[in-house]
Figure (cartoon, rainbow, N blue to C red):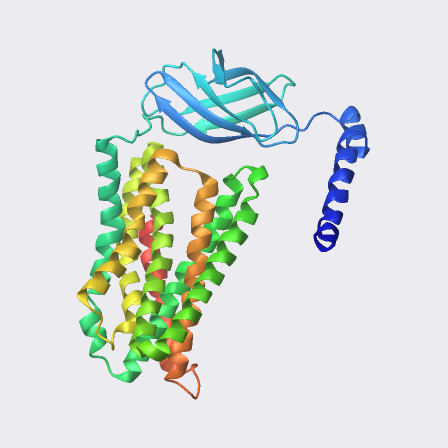
Amino acid sequence: MKRWFFAFLPLILLGILVALILTTGPLGLFRTILPPIQELAVERIVLKPDEILLYVVNDGPDPITIAQVMVNGAFWNFRIEPRKTLPRLGRGTIRIPYPWVEGDTEHITLLTRDGVTFEVEVEVATVTPTPDFKYLSTFALLGFYVGVIPVFLGLLWLPFLKRLRSGWYSFFLALSVGLLFFLGVDALVEAIETTDRTPKTFQGVGVLIIGLSLSFLILSAISRQSQKRAKEAGEAHRKLVLAFLIAFGIGVHNLGEGLAIGAAYAIGEVALGALLVLGFMIHNVTEGVAIIAPIARTGPSIRHLGLMGLLAGGPTILGTWIGGFSYSAIWAVLFLAIGAGAVFQVIIQIVRQMAIGAPGSLATFGNVAGFAAGLLIMYATGFFVAM
């Protein structure tokens, strides 16, 4: 009991100190001198026939009272649930009965009781999809086109890789490292950019660090455990586990791609969504090579290949549903970070596998050429996404 008492004693005293500062200390003094700090984040905008819904969260330290709403420069009636005054981290739904026009741009301004304004914009007004059978099947079909089909097409390179000589096999292993490295960095950069759209209170960078580090460490632990079992099950088992880890990392990354596609269609950017579908289809065919490269010599079963393809491509369908029906920037950051951490971890595993067959050095001209080829392939196919 004494040991636990001394373990919690600093935390108890810290809590008392924080309570004193919040009530009577310097923070209370500043509150009487400085104007209130108000931050409001609009998490999601939903358009229904003749109605606009804003899902907001108080992102600042002080309460916020929404006093007025302007739509396209005109004051408009509104209703906010559950109440007009939002405490810190409080959430609310603002309902605006407004006859918006399909395809138009809608400018919305929120005014607080203290005169602070927050502006949001709907670039292309269109009815927000609802999770009915029509949209569920449509988004599922998009995810199937973007994720599942391209990955399975990439797996068809297995017979070709299986017949390669040792030098060329090492080249394609290095090529898969290049593909995955580009994929991991791309996911990480996208996650960093998405943190700018998350409410400050949710600490998007912190979510990124947690997702990245935990996914890397958890997969490292799984890989280490599989290496112990490989001594009994054989080398083929270790390579099979590695292939499944690669498929998992790619699957989480493809979930992020599905988020982007679903969100684009949900906000009415149909042209952008169509380009994303086309670009990701071409982009994702190369991911099949990264999955099967480590197991090309061991001859995986059809069942294992099917499971890997679904693990890598299936999450795209889930991503389109989340992006289309309830997109959240903070969840996008988390999924992208998890995907990046998983990809970086499997890169290390592939390099270790290559080192087993190259006791001298991995830095051969063939391996460097393969790595560079992987980077260039991902860079070239990325143009179809950026069009």
